[in-house]
Amino acid sequence: MLSLAVDRLSKTYPNGTVALNRVSFSAQPGEGIVLLGSNGSGKSTLLRCIVGLEKPTSGRIGVGNSQLETANACQLRQLRQQIGIVFQRFHLVANLSAFHNVLQGSLGRSKGPRYWFPATAPKQERDRVMQCLERVNLAHLAQQRVDTLSGGQQQRVAIARMLMQDTSLLLVDEPVASLDPKSGREAMDLLWDIVRERQLTAICTLHQLDLAKDYADRIIGLRQGEIQIDAPAHILTDRE
Ligand code: ADP
Ligand code: ADP
Image (cartoon, rainbow, N blue to C red; front, side, top):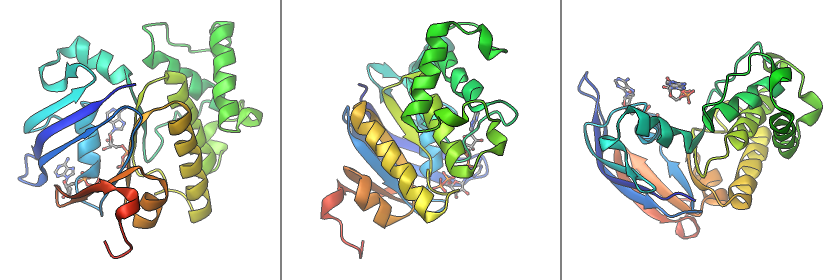
């Protein structure tokens, strides 16, 4: 389990847009946090800073015992391996099977070879891929190309890939944005079951208060790059 500490984090883009302004919070191991905010409030920027895809203008980010801003390239790579990400647009390899995409998750864990042909992966790895696909109820579609799957199914492949990576900090960017309401709820149910099962520290961005209230332990509300509210989910009302 990993803790996360964000300390007075600011990000101003080169064009002058202030995306984050002195954002501070820390996540305890095993805590499920929803980062709630409308479009443009800075949610994606914050996630990208945490994984090191974006360089903050100022402030500090601690993951476990490491500080992101002082990490060298090698340490940064190791840090990123400890962070599972489920992107809004899934970032799957379209022309590969579900099985092959999930297998790529193992790349995050080791310096092992890239498996161009899934059949060349050790049996143990292949068994684990099937276990991860079974966990998201997709074992029956393992051999299907992901670009022939529905949005909800593609997202489950992305979740299985994250499981394969076996991290303890999970970042989820707008998991319901590309799904219809029913699939969205199913996706949140599955994600949150996994967060509980694996005791993951999770940060999930959303822009819907009703979903946030139903799933989060804690809600951090972001508005124009600043934290407006940071509270246990159950004390928020519909008018917030
Ligand atoms: P959210 O994820 O909540 O929609 P973002 O983090 O994507 O918010 O964006 C926060 C603000 O930063 C917005 O005003 C957005 O237009 C701006 N922004 C995001 N990415 C860039 C970029 N690469 N260059 C300039 N401005 C950006
Ligand atoms: P969006 O919020 O635009 O739908 P995603 O949620 O798919 O984007 O991804 C979040 C951000 O991270 C995007 O701005 C994307 O450019 C960036 N990103 C995603 N995957 C990678 C990657 N593998 N390497 C570098 N940047 C990435």
